Each structure stands twice: as structure tokens, then as C-alpha cells.
Image 1 (tube, rainbow, N blue to C red):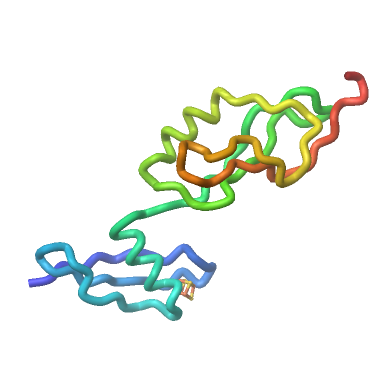
Image 2: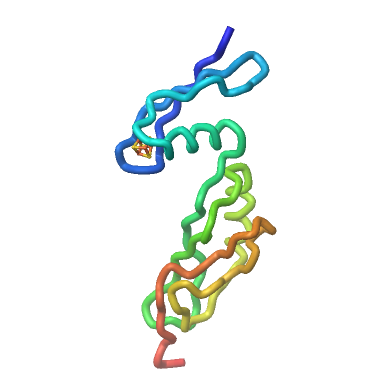
Length: 127
Ligand code: SF4
């Protein structure tokens, strides 16, 4: 007997409705509903090692108008570590100027990805 898992693919805006059929031992027997191969990879990853790119903001000081800086990881981290990541980021403050792509945290959470600035922000002219 097999189990069917259903998920919506979030890789592109088409949002295909995916189904995976699992054997009793958890082995993935087949994936269907995907329009392209990325959807099958997404479903297989979701069932074995779900990962996400983290996109959020951190506190920013020394800028004219911005109090927060958009940041994102330049690769994916395990979905199960997102809460821990947000806790770490709540303790981070960046000082302007910042250039888009600047590394804010190297090897973020030891996951081999960097947290980078998503925006260029000039320093305040008032110091
Ligand atoms: S299966 Fe392919 S086409 Fe469908 S949502 Fe995923 S990436 Fe987009």
C-alpha cells in the first residue's frame, strides 16, 4: 500500500499541484502533476530535505531614511532552521553605508551560505 502526499510547487508562479506516491518505507515511488523537472526536484527535496532562501530585514543605523535593511541568504538553508535564523537576525544591527550584495554574515548558521544586503543605503550626511 502507498501513501499520496500533495503539495503546491512554489518554484514558479504557475503553482502546479504535485503529488508524490510513497511506499510504506517512505521511499518515493513517483512524482506527478509537475509541468517541468524543477517541480519533481522540489517535491523530492520537500520530502527529504526541505530548504528555503531566507528573505527578511535587519536593523540599520546611520542611514538618512531607513531603519531596516532588506537581507537574504545567497542560497538555501534547512526549513527547520528558519525560526533559529530569525532569532539570530533579531540581534544583528548593520551600520550604513551598505552596498547591495555586501556580506552581512558569512557562513550563516554554518550552512555554507552568506547573508547579503538586498539594497544599497548611503550613510546619513548628518553623521
Ligand atoms: S512544476 Fe515547473 S512549471 Fe509547475 S510550478 Fe513547479 S517549476 Fe513551475
